[in-house]
Image 1 (cartoon, rainbow, N blue to C red):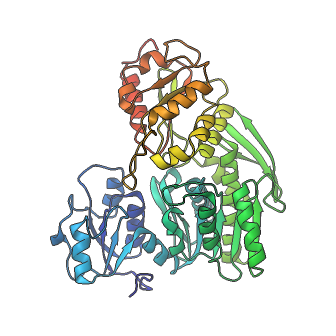
Image 2: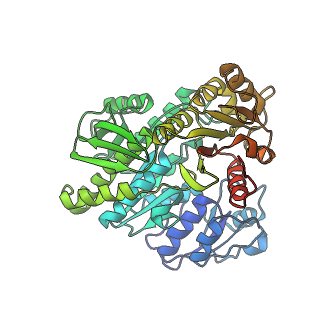
Image 3: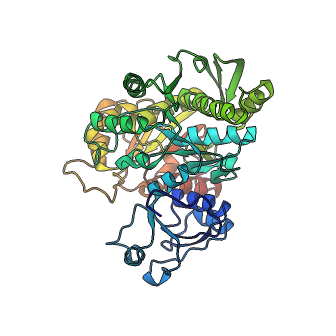
Amino acid sequence: MTLSTFPESLEGLKVYFIGAKGTGMAALAEILASRGARLAGSDVPDSFYTDAVLAAIGLEPYQSFDASHIAEDIDIVLYSDAYNVSNNPEMARSASLGLPMFSFAQALGALSRLSDSSGVAGVHGKTTTTAMTGTLLARLGCPATVLAGSAVASFGGSCTMRAGSRYFVAETDEYRRHFLHFSPRRILLTSIESDHQDYYPDYQSIFEAYGEYLDSLPAGGLLLYCADDPGAVAAASRLKKLRSDLRFAPYGTKAEGPWRIESIGQEEGRSLFRISTFKETLELHLPGAHLVLDAVAALALAEDIFRDWKGRAPGKEEWWSMTQALAAFAGSKRRSEIIGSAGGVLFFDDYAHHPTALAATIQGIKAFWPSRRLVVDFMSHTYSRTAALLDEFAASLDGADCLLLHGIYSSARERPIPGINGLSLYEKVRIRRPELSGGRAKATGFLYYSEKPLDAIEDLPRLLRPGDLFITMGAGDNWKLGAAALKKMKEGDFSDV
Protein backbone atom coordinates (compact mmCIF):
# COMPACT_ATOMS: atom_id res chain seq x y z
CA MET A 1 0.00 0.00 0.00
CA THR A 2 1.36 3.44 -0.93
CA LEU A 3 0.54 6.82 0.56
CA SER A 4 -1.96 7.49 -2.23
CA THR A 5 -4.23 4.47 -1.98
CA PHE A 6 -6.69 2.75 0.32
CA PRO A 7 -7.84 -0.86 -0.20
CA GLU A 8 -10.93 -1.27 -2.36
CA SER A 9 -12.75 -2.55 0.74
CA LEU A 10 -12.38 -0.82 4.10
CA GLU A 11 -14.29 -3.54 5.94
CA GLY A 12 -12.38 -4.55 9.10
CA LEU A 13 -9.50 -2.16 8.39
CA LYS A 14 -7.87 -1.00 11.65
CA VAL A 15 -7.40 2.77 11.44
CA TYR A 16 -5.84 5.03 14.07
CA PHE A 17 -6.53 8.81 14.12
CA ILE A 18 -3.92 11.20 15.54
CA GLY A 19 -5.81 14.43 16.25
CA ALA A 20 -9.21 12.76 15.97
CA LYS A 21 -11.25 15.73 17.21
CA GLY A 22 -10.52 18.03 14.28
CA THR A 23 -13.52 18.77 12.09
CA GLY A 24 -12.04 17.13 9.00
CA MET A 25 -10.64 14.17 10.93
CA ALA A 26 -13.98 13.50 12.61
CA ALA A 27 -15.64 13.63 9.20
CA LEU A 28 -13.17 11.09 7.84
CA ALA A 29 -13.86 8.89 10.86
CA GLU A 30 -17.58 8.95 10.09
CA ILE A 31 -16.98 7.90 6.49
CA LEU A 32 -14.54 5.11 7.34
CA ALA A 33 -16.80 3.81 10.11
CA SER A 34 -19.75 3.72 7.70
CA ARG A 35 -17.65 1.54 5.39
CA GLY A 36 -16.76 -0.98 8.08
CA ALA A 37 -13.37 0.22 9.34
CA ARG A 38 -12.42 -0.33 13.01
CA LEU A 39 -11.37 2.96 14.58
CA ALA A 40 -9.25 4.20 17.45
CA GLY A 41 -7.47 7.49 18.04
CA SER A 42 -6.24 10.25 20.29
CA ASP A 43 -6.33 13.99 20.86
CA VAL A 44 -5.96 16.66 23.53
CA PRO A 45 -8.33 16.51 26.56
CA ASP A 46 -10.19 19.74 25.59
CA SER A 47 -13.87 19.37 24.71
CA PHE A 48 -15.03 19.97 21.13
CA TYR A 49 -18.40 19.62 19.40
CA THR A 50 -16.84 16.72 17.50
CA ASP A 51 -16.73 14.69 20.73
CA ALA A 52 -20.41 13.90 20.17
CA VAL A 53 -19.75 13.07 16.50
CA LEU A 54 -17.03 10.58 17.44
CA ALA A 55 -19.06 9.08 20.28
CA ALA A 56 -21.94 8.42 17.87
CA ILE A 57 -19.71 6.13 15.79
CA GLY A 58 -18.16 4.45 18.82
CA LEU A 59 -14.80 6.23 18.73
CA GLU A 60 -13.69 7.44 22.16
CA PRO A 61 -10.18 8.81 21.60
CA TYR A 62 -7.41 8.75 24.18
CA GLN A 63 -7.16 12.16 25.84
CA SER A 64 -3.40 12.36 25.33
CA PHE A 65 -0.69 11.37 22.88
CA ASP A 66 1.45 8.43 23.90
CA ALA A 67 3.61 6.09 21.83
CA SER A 68 2.16 3.11 23.71
CA HIS A 69 -1.19 3.73 21.99
CA ILE A 70 0.28 2.66 18.65
CA ALA A 71 0.02 -1.11 18.14
CA GLU A 72 1.89 -2.97 15.44
CA ASP A 73 -1.30 -4.40 13.94
CA ILE A 74 -2.69 -0.99 12.93
CA ASP A 75 -3.38 -0.98 9.18
CA ILE A 76 -3.45 2.81 8.59
CA VAL A 77 -2.55 5.88 10.62
CA LEU A 78 -4.34 9.13 9.77
CA TYR A 79 -2.94 12.32 11.24
CA SER A 80 -3.92 15.96 11.53
CA ASP A 81 -1.65 18.46 9.79
CA ALA A 82 -1.07 20.04 13.21
CA TYR A 83 1.30 17.18 14.08
CA ASN A 84 4.51 15.65 12.75
CA VAL A 85 7.11 13.10 13.85
CA SER A 86 9.10 15.75 15.73
CA ASN A 87 6.25 17.03 17.92
CA ASN A 88 4.06 13.96 18.38
CA PRO A 89 5.21 10.67 19.99
CA GLU A 90 2.48 8.66 18.28
CA MET A 91 3.59 9.84 14.86
CA ALA A 92 7.20 9.05 15.72
CA ARG A 93 6.20 5.55 16.85
CA SER A 94 4.10 4.99 13.70
CA ALA A 95 6.99 6.04 11.49
CA SER A 96 9.43 3.78 13.32
CA LEU A 97 7.10 0.81 12.78
CA GLY A 98 6.76 1.62 9.09
CA LEU A 99 2.97 1.91 9.31
CA PRO A 100 1.17 3.47 6.31
CA MET A 101 0.57 7.12 7.29
CA PHE A 102 -1.80 9.57 5.65
CA SER A 103 -2.30 13.26 6.35
CA PHE A 104 -5.89 14.51 6.20
CA ALA A 105 -5.38 15.76 2.62
CA GLN A 106 -3.78 12.47 1.56
CA ALA A 107 -6.61 10.47 3.12
CA LEU A 108 -9.18 12.62 1.34
CA GLY A 109 -7.34 11.96 -1.89
CA ALA A 110 -7.27 8.22 -1.23
CA LEU A 111 -11.03 8.23 -0.69
CA SER A 112 -11.54 10.18 -3.91
CA ARG A 113 -9.96 7.33 -5.88
CA LEU A 114 -12.57 4.87 -4.58
CA SER A 115 -15.51 6.78 -6.09
CA ASP A 116 -16.64 9.07 -8.90
CA SER A 117 -15.45 12.22 -7.13
CA SER A 118 -16.15 15.95 -7.30
CA GLY A 119 -14.02 18.60 -5.59
CA VAL A 120 -15.43 21.93 -4.47
CA ALA A 121 -12.69 24.56 -4.52
CA GLY A 122 -12.30 28.32 -4.11
CA VAL A 123 -11.16 30.98 -1.68
CA HIS A 124 -14.80 31.62 -0.71
CA GLY A 125 -17.95 29.55 -0.45
CA LYS A 126 -16.52 26.02 -0.37
CA THR A 127 -18.26 24.83 2.77
CA THR A 128 -21.71 26.23 2.03
CA THR A 129 -21.65 25.05 -1.59
CA THR A 130 -20.56 21.56 -0.54
CA ALA A 131 -23.24 21.44 2.16
CA MET A 132 -25.92 22.54 -0.32
CA THR A 133 -24.77 19.94 -2.85
CA GLY A 134 -24.99 17.20 -0.23
CA THR A 135 -28.45 18.37 0.77
CA LEU A 136 -29.64 18.19 -2.85
CA LEU A 137 -28.10 14.78 -3.49
CA ALA A 138 -29.67 13.42 -0.32
CA ARG A 139 -33.07 14.71 -1.38
CA LEU A 140 -32.62 13.04 -4.79
CA GLY A 141 -31.67 9.75 -3.14
CA CYS A 142 -28.29 9.67 -4.86
CA PRO A 143 -25.78 7.01 -3.66
CA ALA A 144 -23.21 9.56 -2.53
CA THR A 145 -20.96 10.55 0.33
CA VAL A 146 -20.39 14.26 0.91
CA LEU A 147 -17.80 15.85 3.20
CA ALA A 148 -18.12 19.53 4.15
CA GLY A 149 -15.77 21.61 6.27
CA SER A 150 -18.32 22.28 9.00
CA ALA A 151 -21.31 20.73 10.73
CA VAL A 152 -24.40 20.96 8.53
CA ALA A 153 -27.95 21.11 9.90
CA SER A 154 -29.37 19.05 7.03
CA PHE A 155 -26.71 16.39 7.66
CA GLY A 156 -28.10 15.94 11.16
CA GLY A 157 -25.41 18.19 12.62
CA SER A 158 -22.64 16.09 11.07
CA CYS A 159 -19.98 17.21 8.58
CA THR A 160 -20.83 14.32 6.29
CA MET A 161 -23.77 12.98 4.33
CA ARG A 162 -23.36 9.22 3.87
CA ALA A 163 -25.81 7.56 1.51
CA GLY A 164 -23.50 5.38 -0.59
CA SER A 165 -20.03 5.34 -2.11
CA ARG A 166 -20.67 5.53 -5.86
CA TYR A 167 -20.18 9.32 -5.76
CA PHE A 168 -18.02 11.42 -3.48
CA VAL A 169 -18.20 15.21 -3.12
CA ALA A 170 -15.72 16.99 -0.89
CA GLU A 171 -14.51 20.44 -0.01
CA THR A 172 -10.91 20.66 -1.26
CA ASP A 173 -8.41 23.07 0.27
CA GLU A 174 -5.88 25.18 -1.61
CA TYR A 175 -3.58 25.75 1.37
CA ARG A 176 -0.14 24.23 0.68
CA ARG A 177 -1.65 22.74 -2.47
CA HIS A 178 -3.54 20.16 -0.43
CA PHE A 179 -6.15 19.81 -3.17
CA LEU A 180 -3.56 18.24 -5.46
CA HIS A 181 -3.97 14.98 -3.50
CA PHE A 182 -7.61 14.81 -4.65
CA SER A 183 -8.59 13.02 -7.88
CA PRO A 184 -11.72 14.73 -9.21
CA ARG A 185 -13.92 13.95 -12.18
CA ARG A 186 -15.62 17.30 -11.61
CA ILE A 187 -14.36 20.52 -10.04
CA LEU A 188 -16.65 23.27 -8.88
CA LEU A 189 -14.63 26.51 -8.69
CA THR A 190 -16.21 29.38 -6.74
CA SER A 191 -13.41 31.96 -6.68
CA ILE A 192 -9.70 32.70 -6.82
CA GLU A 193 -8.18 35.61 -4.91
CA SER A 194 -4.97 36.32 -3.08
CA ASP A 195 -5.02 34.50 0.27
CA HIS A 196 -2.80 32.39 2.56
CA GLN A 197 -0.02 34.91 2.11
CA ASP A 198 2.28 32.87 4.36
CA TYR A 199 2.38 30.24 1.60
CA TYR A 200 1.29 32.10 -1.56
CA PRO A 201 3.24 35.40 -1.56
CA ASP A 202 1.25 36.88 -4.45
CA TYR A 203 -1.84 36.33 -6.56
CA GLN A 204 0.05 34.63 -9.36
CA SER A 205 1.32 31.91 -7.07
CA ILE A 206 -2.14 30.95 -5.82
CA PHE A 207 -3.56 31.24 -9.34
CA GLU A 208 -0.95 28.80 -10.62
CA ALA A 209 -1.80 26.33 -7.84
CA TYR A 210 -5.45 26.41 -8.85
CA GLY A 211 -4.41 26.00 -12.49
CA GLU A 212 -2.52 22.84 -11.61
CA TYR A 213 -5.55 21.46 -9.76
CA LEU A 214 -7.95 22.21 -12.61
CA ASP A 215 -5.60 20.60 -15.10
CA SER A 216 -5.78 17.35 -13.09
CA LEU A 217 -9.29 16.74 -14.45
CA PRO A 218 -9.43 13.64 -16.65
CA ALA A 219 -10.65 13.67 -20.26
CA GLY A 220 -14.40 14.29 -20.23
CA GLY A 221 -14.20 15.92 -16.81
CA LEU A 222 -16.31 18.93 -15.91
CA LEU A 223 -15.28 22.37 -14.67
CA LEU A 224 -18.14 24.33 -13.14
CA TYR A 225 -16.98 27.89 -12.47
CA CYS A 226 -18.39 31.18 -11.25
CA ALA A 227 -18.71 33.63 -14.13
CA ASP A 228 -19.03 36.48 -11.62
CA ASP A 229 -15.56 35.91 -10.18
CA PRO A 230 -12.63 37.30 -12.24
CA GLY A 231 -10.17 34.74 -10.89
CA ALA A 232 -12.42 31.80 -11.68
CA VAL A 233 -13.11 33.16 -15.18
CA ALA A 234 -9.40 33.67 -15.86
CA ALA A 235 -8.59 30.13 -14.70
CA ALA A 236 -11.36 28.65 -16.84
CA SER A 237 -10.23 30.66 -19.89
CA ARG A 238 -6.68 29.44 -19.45
CA LEU A 239 -7.81 25.82 -19.12
CA LYS A 240 -10.02 26.03 -22.22
CA LYS A 241 -6.94 26.87 -24.28
CA LEU A 242 -5.07 23.88 -22.89
CA ARG A 243 -7.78 21.22 -22.67
CA SER A 244 -10.29 20.75 -25.47
CA ASP A 245 -11.20 17.38 -23.95
CA LEU A 246 -13.02 18.90 -20.95
CA ARG A 247 -16.54 20.15 -20.36
CA PHE A 248 -17.09 23.70 -19.08
CA ALA A 249 -20.19 25.16 -17.41
CA PRO A 250 -20.28 28.72 -16.02
CA TYR A 251 -22.81 29.85 -13.43
CA GLY A 252 -23.80 33.26 -12.09
CA THR A 253 -25.34 36.53 -13.20
CA LYS A 254 -22.72 36.91 -15.97
CA ALA A 255 -22.92 33.31 -17.17
CA GLU A 256 -24.24 32.14 -20.51
CA GLY A 257 -26.19 28.92 -20.59
CA PRO A 258 -28.48 27.00 -18.25
CA TRP A 259 -26.92 28.27 -15.01
CA ARG A 260 -27.34 31.97 -15.68
CA ILE A 261 -28.96 33.78 -12.74
CA GLU A 262 -31.60 35.96 -14.35
CA SER A 263 -32.74 37.79 -11.24
CA ILE A 264 -32.04 38.07 -7.50
CA GLY A 265 -34.41 39.73 -5.06
CA GLN A 266 -34.15 40.29 -1.31
CA GLU A 267 -37.08 40.42 1.06
CA GLU A 268 -37.15 40.47 4.84
CA GLY A 269 -35.90 37.02 5.76
CA ARG A 270 -35.49 35.45 2.31
CA SER A 271 -33.76 35.64 -1.07
CA LEU A 272 -35.69 35.01 -4.29
CA PHE A 273 -33.97 34.15 -7.57
CA ARG A 274 -34.52 32.69 -11.03
CA ILE A 275 -32.19 30.76 -13.32
CA SER A 276 -32.31 30.07 -17.05
CA THR A 277 -32.81 26.32 -16.80
CA PHE A 278 -35.81 26.46 -14.44
CA LYS A 279 -38.46 29.13 -14.91
CA GLU A 280 -39.97 28.99 -11.44
CA THR A 281 -38.79 31.36 -8.70
CA LEU A 282 -36.44 29.69 -6.21
CA GLU A 283 -36.22 30.62 -2.56
CA LEU A 284 -33.38 30.67 -0.06
CA HIS A 285 -33.78 31.56 3.61
CA LEU A 286 -30.19 32.73 4.00
CA PRO A 287 -28.83 36.28 3.58
CA GLY A 288 -26.86 37.50 0.59
CA ALA A 289 -26.43 37.27 -3.16
CA HIS A 290 -23.19 35.34 -2.58
CA LEU A 291 -25.24 32.48 -1.08
CA VAL A 292 -27.52 32.50 -4.12
CA LEU A 293 -24.38 31.93 -6.20
CA ASP A 294 -23.51 28.99 -3.95
CA ALA A 295 -27.02 27.58 -4.34
CA VAL A 296 -26.90 27.74 -8.15
CA ALA A 297 -23.44 26.14 -8.14
CA ALA A 298 -24.80 23.30 -5.98
CA LEU A 299 -27.76 22.83 -8.32
CA ALA A 300 -25.41 22.61 -11.30
CA LEU A 301 -23.15 20.04 -9.65
CA ALA A 302 -26.02 17.95 -8.31
CA GLU A 303 -27.68 17.99 -11.73
CA ASP A 304 -24.55 16.69 -13.47
CA ILE A 305 -24.12 13.91 -10.91
CA PHE A 306 -27.81 13.02 -11.29
CA ARG A 307 -27.40 12.79 -15.08
CA ASP A 308 -24.47 10.42 -14.65
CA TRP A 309 -26.40 8.32 -12.14
CA LYS A 310 -29.74 8.11 -13.97
CA GLY A 311 -28.62 8.67 -17.57
CA ARG A 312 -31.09 11.53 -17.97
CA ALA A 313 -31.80 15.07 -16.85
CA PRO A 314 -33.84 15.61 -13.67
CA GLY A 315 -37.56 15.63 -14.30
CA LYS A 316 -40.13 18.08 -12.96
CA GLU A 317 -40.58 16.11 -9.76
CA GLU A 318 -36.83 15.98 -9.10
CA TRP A 319 -36.49 19.72 -9.75
CA TRP A 320 -39.32 20.41 -7.36
CA SER A 321 -37.62 18.25 -4.74
CA MET A 322 -34.35 20.17 -5.14
CA THR A 323 -36.02 23.57 -4.89
CA GLN A 324 -37.74 22.50 -1.68
CA ALA A 325 -34.42 21.27 -0.28
CA LEU A 326 -32.83 24.67 -0.97
CA ALA A 327 -35.74 26.52 0.61
CA ALA A 328 -35.35 24.41 3.75
CA PHE A 329 -31.53 24.66 3.85
CA ALA A 330 -30.54 26.10 7.22
CA GLY A 331 -26.81 26.56 6.61
CA SER A 332 -23.84 25.10 8.41
CA LYS A 333 -21.95 25.84 11.58
CA ARG A 334 -20.25 29.25 11.56
CA ARG A 335 -21.74 30.19 8.15
CA SER A 336 -24.33 32.92 8.77
CA GLU A 337 -25.38 30.81 11.73
CA ILE A 338 -28.11 32.14 14.00
CA ILE A 339 -27.02 31.19 17.50
CA GLY A 340 -29.97 32.74 19.35
CA SER A 341 -31.83 35.87 20.38
CA ALA A 342 -32.40 37.68 23.67
CA GLY A 343 -33.35 41.17 24.77
CA GLY A 344 -34.47 42.03 21.26
CA VAL A 345 -30.98 41.31 19.89
CA LEU A 346 -30.41 38.64 17.22
CA PHE A 347 -27.04 36.86 17.57
CA PHE A 348 -25.16 35.49 14.57
CA ASP A 349 -21.78 33.91 13.92
CA ASP A 350 -19.91 33.67 10.62
CA TYR A 351 -16.51 32.31 9.59
CA ALA A 352 -15.85 35.04 6.98
CA HIS A 353 -12.18 36.03 7.36
CA HIS A 354 -11.25 37.48 3.94
CA PRO A 355 -12.28 41.02 2.89
CA THR A 356 -14.38 39.83 -0.04
CA ALA A 357 -16.31 37.38 2.13
CA LEU A 358 -16.73 39.96 4.90
CA ALA A 359 -18.15 42.58 2.53
CA ALA A 360 -20.50 40.12 0.83
CA THR A 361 -21.81 38.72 4.12
CA ILE A 362 -22.36 42.17 5.64
CA GLN A 363 -24.12 43.40 2.51
CA GLY A 364 -26.33 40.31 2.45
CA ILE A 365 -27.31 40.64 6.09
CA LYS A 366 -28.13 44.34 5.68
CA ALA A 367 -30.43 43.53 2.77
CA PHE A 368 -31.98 40.58 4.59
CA TRP A 369 -32.74 42.51 7.80
CA PRO A 370 -32.86 46.17 6.71
CA SER A 371 -34.66 47.31 9.85
CA ARG A 372 -31.93 46.12 12.23
CA ARG A 373 -28.80 47.98 13.29
CA LEU A 374 -25.85 45.78 12.32
CA VAL A 375 -23.20 45.38 15.03
CA VAL A 376 -20.15 43.52 13.69
CA ASP A 377 -17.51 42.01 15.93
CA PHE A 378 -14.47 41.10 13.81
CA MET A 379 -11.19 39.40 14.67
CA SER A 380 -8.52 39.22 12.00
CA HIS A 381 -6.78 35.88 11.40
CA THR A 382 -3.01 35.66 10.73
CA TYR A 383 -0.50 38.49 10.63
CA SER A 384 0.40 37.84 7.00
CA ARG A 385 -3.19 38.12 5.75
CA THR A 386 -3.81 41.25 7.84
CA ALA A 387 -0.62 42.94 6.61
CA ALA A 388 -1.26 42.11 2.97
CA LEU A 389 -4.94 43.13 2.96
CA LEU A 390 -5.13 45.84 5.65
CA ASP A 391 -6.79 48.48 3.46
CA GLU A 392 -9.15 45.89 2.00
CA PHE A 393 -10.17 44.75 5.48
CA ALA A 394 -10.97 48.32 6.53
CA ALA A 395 -13.09 48.88 3.41
CA SER A 396 -14.89 45.54 3.75
CA LEU A 397 -16.36 46.64 7.11
CA ASP A 398 -17.99 49.79 5.68
CA GLY A 399 -21.46 48.23 5.71
CA ALA A 400 -21.46 47.70 9.48
CA ASP A 401 -23.34 50.27 11.59
CA CYS A 402 -21.16 49.51 14.61
CA LEU A 403 -17.82 47.73 14.96
CA LEU A 404 -15.95 45.86 17.66
CA LEU A 405 -12.37 44.90 16.79
CA HIS A 406 -9.74 42.81 18.56
CA GLY A 407 -6.16 41.66 18.45
CA ILE A 408 -5.02 39.37 15.65
CA TYR A 409 -5.77 35.67 16.08
CA SER A 410 -2.39 34.27 15.21
CA SER A 411 -1.54 30.96 13.57
CA ALA A 412 1.01 28.47 14.79
CA ARG A 413 2.43 28.43 11.27
CA GLU A 414 3.68 32.06 11.37
CA ARG A 415 5.41 34.66 13.51
CA PRO A 416 4.15 38.16 14.38
CA ILE A 417 5.03 40.93 11.91
CA PRO A 418 6.51 44.07 13.52
CA GLY A 419 4.13 47.01 13.29
CA ILE A 420 1.08 44.86 12.46
CA ASN A 421 -1.46 44.15 15.21
CA GLY A 422 -5.14 44.50 15.95
CA LEU A 423 -4.81 48.22 16.50
CA SER A 424 -3.49 48.62 12.95
CA LEU A 425 -6.94 47.77 11.58
CA TYR A 426 -8.67 49.80 14.30
CA GLU A 427 -6.73 52.92 13.29
CA LYS A 428 -7.48 52.36 9.60
CA VAL A 429 -11.19 52.12 10.33
CA ARG A 430 -11.13 55.10 12.73
CA ILE A 431 -9.62 57.33 10.04
CA ARG A 432 -11.88 55.91 7.34
CA ARG A 433 -15.08 56.28 9.36
CA PRO A 434 -14.84 59.29 11.67
CA GLU A 435 -18.62 59.27 12.10
CA LEU A 436 -18.33 56.27 14.41
CA SER A 437 -18.01 57.30 18.04
CA GLY A 438 -15.46 55.79 20.38
CA GLY A 439 -17.91 53.37 21.96
CA ARG A 440 -20.36 55.89 23.47
CA ALA A 441 -23.42 54.31 24.98
CA LYS A 442 -26.39 55.38 22.86
CA ALA A 443 -24.54 56.52 19.75
CA THR A 444 -26.07 55.69 16.38
CA GLY A 445 -22.86 53.93 15.47
CA PHE A 446 -19.73 53.12 17.44
CA LEU A 447 -16.20 51.80 17.06
CA TYR A 448 -14.80 49.78 19.94
CA TYR A 449 -11.55 47.90 20.56
CA SER A 450 -10.51 45.27 23.05
CA GLU A 451 -7.38 43.17 22.66
CA LYS A 452 -9.16 39.99 23.74
CA PRO A 453 -12.78 39.41 22.67
CA LEU A 454 -14.11 38.53 26.13
CA ASP A 455 -12.64 41.78 27.51
CA ALA A 456 -15.61 43.48 25.82
CA ILE A 457 -18.28 41.53 27.69
CA GLU A 458 -18.74 44.10 30.46
CA ASP A 459 -19.26 46.95 27.97
CA LEU A 460 -21.77 45.21 25.72
CA PRO A 461 -24.81 46.17 27.91
CA ARG A 462 -24.35 49.82 27.05
CA LEU A 463 -23.42 49.19 23.41
CA LEU A 464 -26.21 46.84 22.29
CA ARG A 465 -29.87 47.80 22.12
CA PRO A 466 -33.14 46.06 21.18
CA GLY A 467 -33.45 45.54 17.45
CA ASP A 468 -29.72 45.04 16.90
CA LEU A 469 -28.22 42.17 14.95
CA PHE A 470 -24.91 41.26 16.58
CA ILE A 471 -22.57 39.09 14.52
CA THR A 472 -19.14 37.73 15.36
CA MET A 473 -17.03 37.29 12.20
CA GLY A 474 -13.64 35.76 11.51
CA ALA A 475 -11.61 32.58 11.89
CA GLY A 476 -10.54 33.43 15.44
CA ASP A 477 -12.13 32.73 18.81
CA ASN A 478 -14.28 35.87 19.07
CA TRP A 479 -17.33 33.64 18.64
CA LYS A 480 -16.96 33.15 22.38
CA LEU A 481 -18.01 36.78 22.93
CA GLY A 482 -21.28 36.25 21.07
CA ALA A 483 -21.99 33.07 23.03
CA ALA A 484 -21.19 34.77 26.35
CA ALA A 485 -23.30 37.83 25.53
CA LEU A 486 -26.26 35.71 24.49
CA LYS A 487 -26.01 33.73 27.73
CA LYS A 488 -25.90 36.91 29.83
CA MET A 489 -28.87 38.43 28.08
CA LYS A 490 -30.92 35.27 28.49
CA GLU A 491 -30.08 35.34 32.19
CA GLY A 492 -31.22 38.95 32.41
CA ASP A 493 -27.78 40.45 33.01
CA PHE A 494 -28.21 42.83 30.08
CA SER A 495 -31.41 44.59 31.08
CA ASP A 496 -32.05 48.15 29.96
CA VAL A 497 -29.83 47.91 26.90
